Amino acid sequence: MVNFNNEWDELLKDEFRKDYYLQLRRKLIDEYRTQRIYPGMYDIFNAMKLTSYNDVKCVILGQDPYHGEGQAHGLSFSVRRGTAPPPSLVNIFKEIRDDTGIDNLGKHGDLTNWAKQGVLLLNSVLTVRADQARSHRGLGWENFTTDVIKLLDQREKPMVFMLWGGDAKAKSQFITNPRHLVLKAAHPSPLSAYNGFFGCRHFSKANRFLRSVGSEEINWSIE
Image (tube, rainbow, N blue to C red; front, side, top):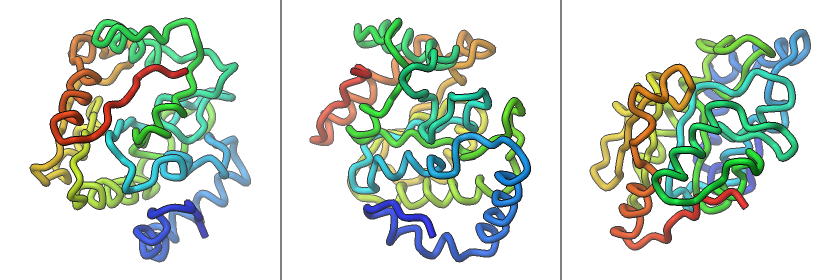
């Protein structure tokens, strides 16, 4: 049984009893036993452990975890201190610098500070085989994260959804509550960042929206 030690425990207790999740769990047990899987099994749900349901101000939705050794730790786009920020994260930092003036470049890639401020750093798929991008698509994680998005959409207190790339944008159909702000852009990957991620100004837009609804802004510094 997964324990978040916050509101997610009650909200998701029935999710973990659904047939699709029980099948997913069986597949994951076999995958972790026979393959190298990222993140570590105790880090899979770090995003929701660090950011409780009622505390969410902003959701940054990624695709699936980094598939290189020592990178993924359960927060989308984040890596632990001591691991070089991957290209997608470097591009995120470039956009933050150009948008807000905050310069995170040349430091580290751990986004825990954002999570503690209410940024839910969620991927559409929460696990991956080493060196095999998108290898856990279709196992059932998409069902789980869609239901998480639906739960967030039901909340009365407004939040911002940042949807980057095709997988994330596909979740927009489940965000129907007009209280929330939905921001869409290309994925920050080097393959697509110049197709609409750079210049999206999502970080300043998010803070303007949060101010307008009486919520505290997010400090996009990683320190």
